[in-house]
Each structure stands twice: as C-alpha cells, then as structure tokens.
Image 1 (spheres, rainbow, N blue to C red):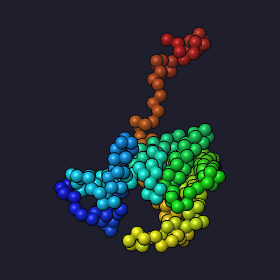
Image 2 (tube, one colour):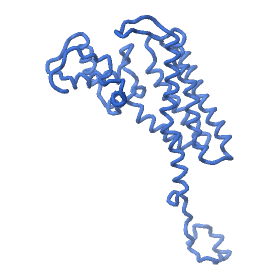
Image 3 (spheres, rainbow, N blue to C red):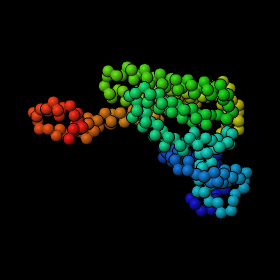
Image 4 (tube, rainbow, N blue to C red):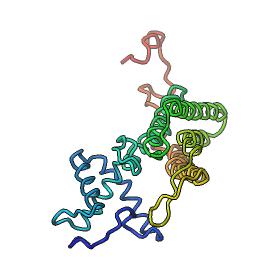
Length: 284
C-alpha cells in the first residue's frame, strides 16, 4: 500500500503478522537488510524525524504508508530502542550478514596454525563484544570493568577452546578439525553474552503489558531472554559453520582441488650427471 496514509498505524510493532512464518521472515530480512549500513547520516536523521513526528501525531504532507514503514525500519536499524542513541555501525543488525560472512570464512580457512587461531578468534570475539554491547538493554548499562571482564573472558574462552580442540584433532580426520571454529564460537557465546548482559541478570529487564505500559523489572525474564539469545546465536552460526566442513571435505577429495605435481623435463628412468645435479632445480 503506497497511497494515502491510513490513520493510527502502530509503528512500534513489526509491519507484518508475527504469528506467521512469512510475516516473521519479512520482518527479519528487513531488519537485517545490509543496505542500511550504506545510508548516510542525513538519511538516518530524516528517518528519525519522520518516526518521532508520527509518534507525536505530526504527519508530513505527502507521506505514504510505504515511506512511513521504510523510515521506521531505517530508524530501528540505526538507533537503540531504549536510549535512542545512534548505535555503533558494526553492532547494528544490518551489519551482521557481511561481518559474519567475512569472519566465519576466515576462521574456517585459517584454523590450522596457532597465530591464525589467536588472531581470528580475537577478531570474532571483539566483534561479538561490540554487537552485545550495542544491543544491550538501555536500563542496565555496563561499567567499564564489567565490559572489560566480559570481553577478556569471552576471548580467552574462545582461544583456549580452539587451541585445545586443535591439539586434540591433529591425529584425527581433517573433517573433525574443521568443526573447531564452530565449537570455539559456541563456547564463547556461552561466556560472552551472559557476561556482557550481567547487569540485566542482576537488576532485571523492563516488563510491559500489551499496551506498552511498564509494569516493573524482572530478573527471571532477563534469564529467559539471555538463554534464548545464547541458543539462537549458536543455531544461527550452525548453517554457516557446521555444513561447509562437509562440503569442503568432499571437494578436497576431488581431482581439481588436489595439488598437481609439476611435470619433469627429464624422461622417465633418466639419471642426472653430477654436474646437472649440482645446479639444483633451477637448471635449464
């Protein structure tokens, strides 16, 4: 619907019916649209103005329903829902696809050496820390000490898990070794998220009724929410980190991925003279 703006549109809720799979999928793909990270500050501020004005009952002339919903999702993609502050770019949901694709690919490619494991697990946990901090509850701000503890603990947990599993898998199938990054990510999520949101576990998160009226804070709700986040983060990583190892293991057995020995310029059975041998492989 792109015509005249209907009255009383509730832009605090998703545009699509969340009781259906299609509705949830449309909402998810709109929230995580990577194109939103390319928007300028001017476009973001314009979306914020439209949303704030509409919530106050001010409707700009000529505004259509599609434009209103577009502004709502741009606003949601860049501004914190509790504090209203502009979120860190790589911590926004719209940055998740390109950032996770890049980091996951690197972790699964460079996992054999200790320096590579250290570097890419550090990069991944640094990114996770930014995401968790950016999307924290605005009612439970973290102190610098709490933030540092969560970051160091998650990074250490991921690195120790990865290095430990790498050591255990050196004498087993290469296929098992390819699952090391996934195991390290799962372990780190179990550490990073609860620590990064520990204030919510202590003081609770806001609980509202169906009309949005705040009823109070609940630590039980925080525990349930954080548990769901941990499980969902692990499951979200599974398709990209648990399926490709099987694919790569199969492809590496194919002829086109196997190393091809360089052809010899000498006929089979030919022996080199002492003079030729002393010139080394560069002799022509």
